Image (cartoon, rainbow, N blue to C red; front, side, top):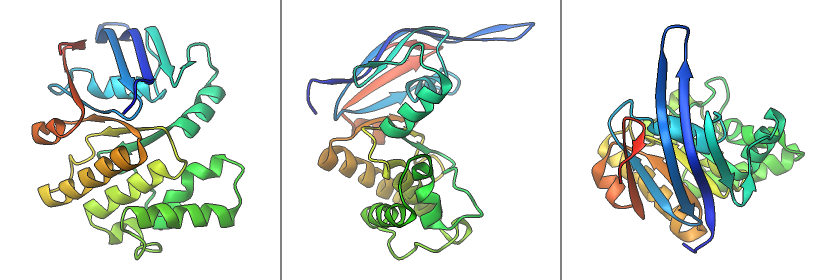
Length: 226
């Protein structure tokens, strides 16, 4: 970990409005994450954790405040610019894997590269490489339905890192796994963090796993409390 700021959130509010009600999901969040840091975000359900992760990942826009990624101010970017920047800079790992059931393992992993000008041969080479990194080189042509939950999450991690992103955002990455498989997934994330200096922000309810990371930030009712 170095002193370079990879993620900078300033004065972030997020308000969801309907005709009848207004809900403040986040209030005045100020947070800096250094390059190579492994940050855990904790708090009760409904406290704004996943909303915050979506804002960091440029999947959702704040109602107020600014998001800066690797020194780039994202406010004012068009949807197309945000999508291209996100594809280059950020990899996502979700609790429910979000694999495409009709595609085999290697094709699932290649998906982020379809948005880049990369040949089919090169996509396959890169996908094979990252699947080997997560210990699934023997499962390239299996379908998601033929894999265990832990294997599905490894495929999701391979997909997240195939584009060589600086940042990995993980939303409850072990939430659907037993303790053994969850431990294996955490080992992979720690290896990516320590050996490749990838910045990781993880939402989790698992106190033991959070304590293994560089820093824990806690939220309650949309506010950062620690």
